[in-house]
Image (cartoon, rainbow, N blue to C red; front, side):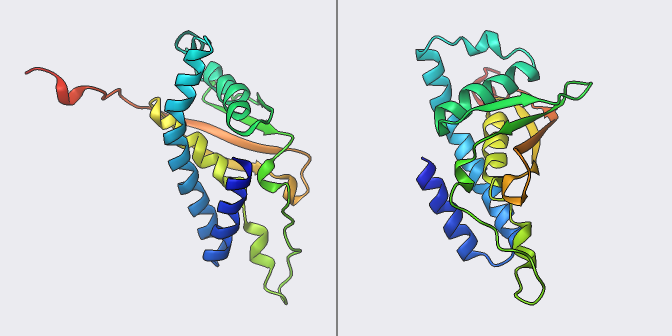
Length: 178
């Protein structure tokens, strides 16, 4: 899975010249992945007897499951959760190891070489899309952003997740009797 994601990153950066557009494309690709991962995640968790229905009663519980089980299941990496807001509607996910940036080095930004804009690339934006797509499938509309990135000299990768809305469960509305 990690190698596939690295190829996605490579070709996305190659195909789009504007780093802002690359970031948006990575988020869209991640969203599509997240939407599709939920079924597999839930079925694997059910088979493993994790009882997610009882574990995910609050956003804090859900954040723990996404970080500690989801990232481990799909990427084989450890993630930690912290920095919950006082209203418990936002939190951070911390990644010590980031397979997406394992073989990546951002060029030094300078105006003469035209590389200044490349410092705006957010390789980990793919994760933001995955988280957004997966949580959307369980009726949680969130916004995600990369706060810290080891590619830019930070000690850790930090993804900030903010709950915007709990979506109404529309499952089955088409099949209700009138």
